Length: 565
Image 1 (tube, rainbow, N blue to C red):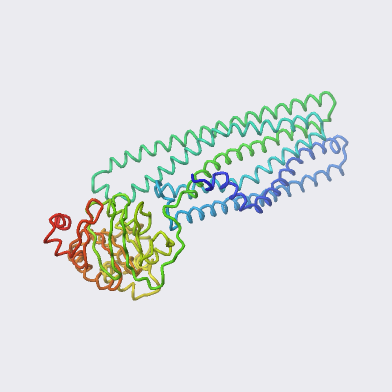
Image 2 (cartoon, rainbow, N blue to C red):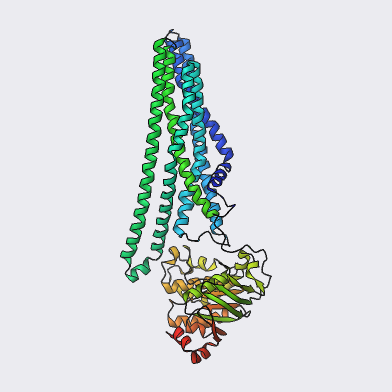
């Protein structure tokens, strides 16, 4: 975790601090509720001594009214406190989810490094919920401690030895409960880690289910998930055993402590030091103490699990950014002149490349890693280890990533569609310009897709567009990229699943719709390359050749093999 980044403890403190007023209000109500409950056995004891033993009907009536008021107050306070505490927990979890979403969606990236999407989802749901629960249980813990103090004071009034026994016995019990919760915290962290990984693997397998079936690799995928799921189950069982052991140990300690109070109270009653009413009150208070101690055991367990989840949330929030911030903003009327100067990153080795404003350039890279690293550089998902990428003479590293992506759009080959209508998907990145959407639909041949759907462009698509064929999804994704109408557009293999005739139509229309706009096609499609102004060939991570598509076909055997294979 980077120095100065949020820690698990800081995440917990911020979650509680954000709900401070609600926690304080709930704590006061909880203290009132517990105080009234502690007074019930005291009033019952007083009733025995002052009303039952003396036969006073008026005293009995007065004390019964006092009991009724106590029950009314404690019941009202309990309901109100429970509503406030549950609300504070939900609000704290919601704000954590917003913080996590903000970090994951940060244009500088980095939060998703080495994390599957399903794992991030698990952190934003399960871990956020557990940390939010801490804001809930704080009020429970405060009210439980208040109940112990009130009970101790009441016992002191009945008998000094009984009161001192409670006051001196509570701190060691609380300390032991905290020590016992340590293994639970460690195992809860492991449980959440395994569960998040299992969720990530499951989401990964579901998203690639069609591919797995096509390859006949279902058995391997099932075996992989079974192993991951078993690891998650084992971690969950270890955490469950630890929690059961924690609660059992605390309950045993509490039972022994309450039994000691009862025995001492009985001895004092037999000795004549306290009255029968006092003995009833003491036994009642001893039994009442079981509730606060169980509540403290629950609070301790929730805090242990909350601390483990807070660490995982802190790791995401403190993830280092993939790229620097940059403070400059592309000038209005960006021309779109892109230049790579000695760019080295991953498979790229000192790439020098000029892409003039308004040009349509094809880039052929037989090495998929080199093509991917080029896209990463142009999208500024990572900065080159050496060299620089420039836009109209300005290094991308000096530009704000969010502002840059409003000018440069990199449409990856595996772009997903949203669970919305076809038109909503196309309009996702477009300005309020109906004509640009219509042009994009026609240029990408997505208008043909819309005509085949039951409700046309208003047809609701399934998750990630799975209700469409592969070629149809590609056309809709291409339409979305074209409708955005960015000064610089980078397309990666936009027509690999499209039939040859449709691909030729798309190639011809693409040149027209992107006229006077900088367009870069990273592809090996001969139909698309044929309409470009120039083709650049990357080999071994560097520029090997450059020229028109027909010239390269005639003169370069390696190029012919790459695009005609």
